Each structure stands twice: as C-alpha cells, then as structure tokens.
Image (cartoon, rainbow, N blue to C red; front, side, top):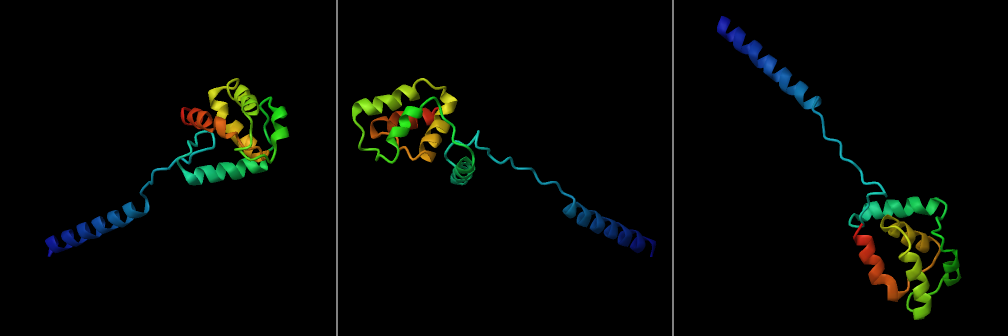
Length: 126
C-alpha cells in the first residue's frame, strides 16, 4: 500500500511539473527589422518602411534641383539630365542611397533609366 501511495504522489508531482512547465516556458523574442536594417528582401519590411516614410517629412539630399523632373517618366530623360541625378548619387554616402531613392519616390520623381542599374547596385551593396 505504501508503494502505491508513493507512486501516486510521484505521478501527481510529475503531472504538476509538466503542466507548470508548459505554461511557463519562455519563447525567444524575435527582433523585428527596422527601416534602418531593411534590406529589400522582406516585402513586409519594405511596405512598413514605405508607410513610415509617407507620414514623415520628405528628406532632401541637397538635390532640390531635381524637383523640376517631378512626374516625368523614367524613359524620358536625356543623358545630360540623367547626369544630374548621377552627380547627386555619387556625392552621397553609401548608407544614404536607399533613403535618397525613397525621397525621390515620395516627391514623384522617377529615377532615369540610364541610372537605375547603378542605383540598384549601390542599394544592394549596403
């Protein structure tokens, strides 16, 4: 009879321990990517950053002269006009390139086709 009682108590103890462990396990906290770390591969991150950028003031990169190209299609730039964009692009820091591209988009300025490959390469090198 004593063995039965000891087994029953042990079984109850193990059951309580198991149930307590299920409710008190810690789950690892997943870090959410911020716009500073968004690399363009996560569409959710890109969408959230675009929404965040839309409510912030538009940041200029000493490129106010590019505002004259507002609403122009990317395939309608002359080589001299594309060179104006290139001058701005190559005078900024590498980590500013993605923000500059977002700034242009918010200002309804399309990047000239002549410059898109260079821009994308620089954005992916970050």
